[in-house]
Length: 201
Image (cartoon, rainbow, N blue to C red; front, side, top):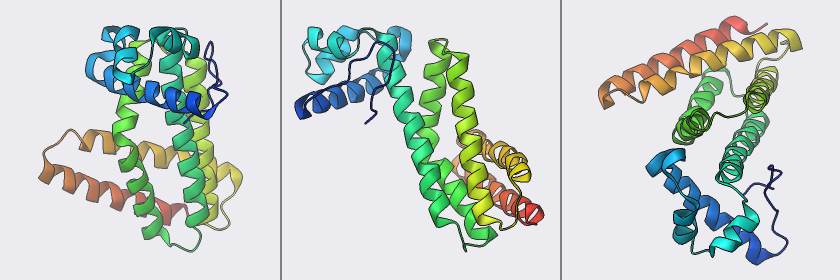
């Protein structure tokens, strides 16, 4: 559940309000996925979440502010996931780290696709996109410094970009038939392992 530092959105003050906002966000995500940003309506989101239209507009004055809250929720999930991963990679070995990184990106895949399409459909702000990319790179660099002892901050930033580009292949793999997908994911794991070995000081 995001804290809702979103333009125009009002943060709930009571537990009942938090539950209502959670229901609105869940309904909004479902309807945006079903109909796209343009096709979704606030009336339908209110009905799906069991919220009076006035209450919906009190928490989210526009469809854009609701979309921002969903993107914020995804961003917070990614950042907290990277932070958790940073705490677990020390002593894993390069094979374990590579598998953990691939598994992390696989777990995010459906939400990542949704977030990207939502940003593209509503013409998301470039500033937000750049902040998210920087947070991803910083989180990945921290993981690599923890996993590959002796990696300098400068080298870890470069390595983070390389690893993130390798992991983008997971998106392509998800569009393939199951047998091909399994083979592609195995190759991506192998590539990440090889790169981590080569990047180790």
